[in-house]
Amino acid sequence: MKILKFIMLSIAAIGLIFACKSKEPDITNAPAKKTAQVKAQAPAYSAMANDIENGKELFIDTKFAGGTAGKSCNSCHPDGRGLEKAGEKKEFSIMGKKQYSLEEAVNFCIVMALKGTAIDPNSQDMKDIAAYIRSLKK
Ligand code: HEC
Image (cartoon, rainbow, N blue to C red; front, side):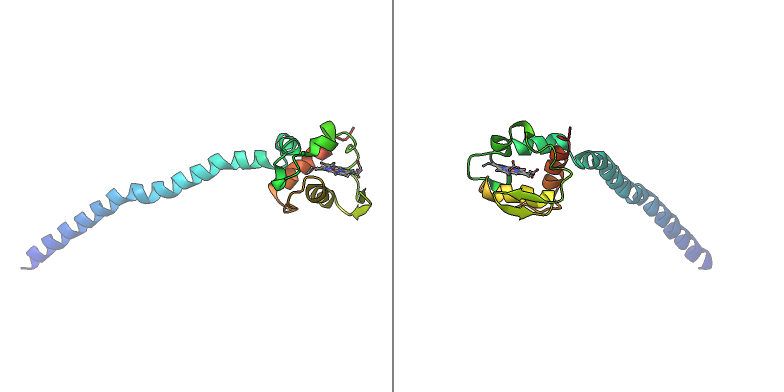
């Protein structure tokens, strides 16, 4: 009887080992695949950080920030003309109103000139358009 029990236990143990082994690749592969995906996305995201090209596209987009005036930033600031110093300024005076950061100035023009909706000052779009404006510095 004891031997039979031992054999049964051994079979169970071997079965368990095999069961674990066959599951192993799943367990180890799943997170590996995820990391690979995250890694594949990472460069795309860091390339997005302050993307001047994207900022320029937004600058000429009449629909930017929900604009309803049919104008883009480029309509009044063709090729960014007149904004060469804006990237470094701390105080702006636009249409008689003072603004105290580049982001505020951009949002002011979004609301007043594009008739759009102010965007989050920390958003990627704002970073990109600010990067484009800063790139105009001569
Ligand atoms: C209807 C015309 C008009 C449109 C469209 C417009 N702006 Fe302006 N913007 C002005 C005027 C007028 C001023 C104040 C005078 C100046 O500095 O040129 C100004 C000033 C600015 C300034 C401050 C410049 C400085 O050095 O003081 C920034 C930055 C700016 N605009 C960004 C933008 C952005 C970004 C857009 C698009 C979202 C935009 N503007 C769309 C008319 C416009």
